[in-house]
Image (cartoon, rainbow, N blue to C red; front, side):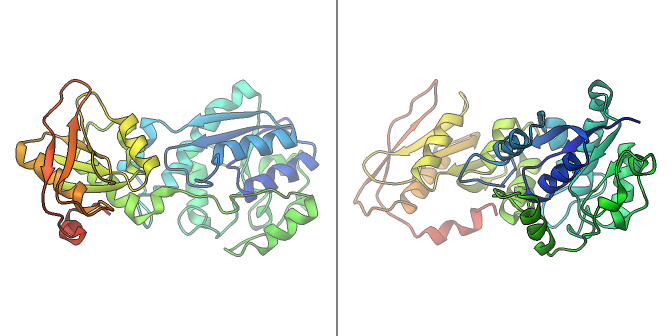
Length: 335
């Protein structure tokens, strides 16, 4: 066993502290950061990936960024160890990441793994029995070092072989974050905009939309997953979903993500949402979509004119003469 390790670096406070503690013990690390469309650390700024890169640059640690692809989404759809409060497969997500890391270790000449896990902090994946389960199923038993809570566990191989000084490791546990804040001040770690991480899979609205997607659209694509986090979603019938923007930025995003066979509906003489129809449309569906767009308009017009188009086909303008209450469509909302 050597002094090289792979560190899981989320960009959050815990993993940042773990990396800093190991740097102070002279461990040579490569950081690995996993991304997905469901990361929610800093949605208003650059996101988890940029924060992880910033930490790695500050600590002069090389970093690799791995996107959780469709193989991961299939795990989200049917996780062997179940979901949490939403569609979060926390146990299987952890196993997935650690297996990926294990595959990288020979190339990086790394002999163990560092994480920022704290015993008892997360209800699903950071309990003692689930931690042991994750270690076994990832094939990394005795090779995962958790500097923040190491003293709650038996010594790992790097500790037993004297590569890491166990006396300099900690015994944090539970959900309070005060010890981490104090340690950050002690170690000079300052900028941590995502102290507890963030995953949209725990969000009830996102979870409902994903369940709907998995049920009604088994041939979903990466673009469909990106759209899950955008706008309002309405299920008009089993074979037809409509996504509407809530702000101009979402209208533009929906337009840019529309597929060549999909139809966009946009207001022409009033302020309102752009709508993307996913599925097969008939004339009654088109009329209903126009009425929904008018219902969510900010304006009050005698006639609402809605353009309908795809990249290949154009249709006549829709006209709506009655603005119905938004509440009429509450039962159609997904999430």
